[in-house]
Length: 78
Image 1 (cartoon, rainbow, N blue to C red):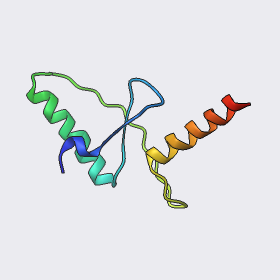
Image 2: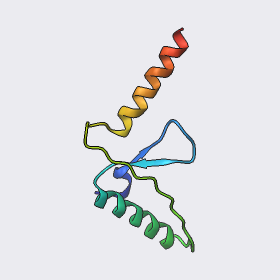
Image 3: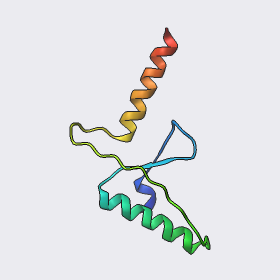
């Protein structure tokens, strides 16, 4: 799978990206991103990550964004 197929871009905040997948898939994605940028001549890269996992329910990043948008739309209607 290509690098771009793993990315899910955030629509709620600027300057952030979110990636979903297994631990190995996400860590491989970060490694691929660093390798790609180094090959383009960028000498130094820093990646800060926040990792979350849950096993009580299935919920994708897009599900979370949809839930927030629904709450925002409900508040606008009041």
